[in-house]
Length: 336
Ligand code: 13P
Ligand code: SF4
Image (cartoon, rainbow, N blue to C red; front, top):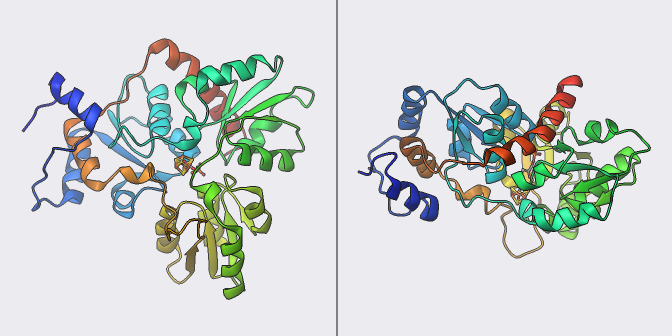
């Protein structure tokens, strides 16, 4: 078995992932992961879009804001981030002294990729005097070019924290941006990015479903396109959507976001029915291909070998931390 800190191993796992690693099939991975948590003083943070097994073994499951807050406050020595790269990177930005590992380094994000920092810098330079508010789904390079980071659960408060006469650039999600323009009445300049999962939902299929389930409430993430948001009964972050289904008097929901969230919805309200909103393509699923790169097996291996780790240049980290700190301060002020 390879050992930790072996340079070749680090290179192999960083480049290829855990492709050539075998796991003893007799191992109970839940038990092993829980053992590793104790041995290594590790915390497993998971996003709602992770596969159910990962959610079930996690110490904390949350939306992007909850995960960033948890990462900022942990006293664990190792943060195991079951999510995508920008989330693990944000945890590293907040915890330079801790090991932050991600089960699969290729777990990226189309929205983050839609805003390359060099191109965004040119865009920003064309709009002098604007405050840059950037959705957390972006790279550290983008964060370093931003004034305040936001997530879907605090974006409105973040925008309202900017004086009314100060123009705003909002990046990278044009759908969330357009939704926030409506919510806040602020005329923001939008970057043209989007999420491949949320822009695929089919309005026609959703309305057909609604016709077959007239009592169902349509709930949607604000990364969805406007026509879908228009028919939604409730719009919110993943945590917002989950809470809505728990507190709602209704029993049936058409859920327009990544299907991973259904696991917590079903666990919290076993007597209610949750129907994943169908995408435009022939595929019946609405999984995020990046989120679903993480598996329980890779989670176990990444804890065991403490690889692959998120590394970051210190100057970039400090520049990216400032707008995250501003977001965390604004969120704390409003009890978010
Ligand atoms: P939230 O969990 O913050 O709502 O974000 C959804 C998302 O798309 C994360 O990639
Ligand atoms: Fe990115 Fe969309 Fe996947 Fe979230 S669901 S990680 S925004 S591609």
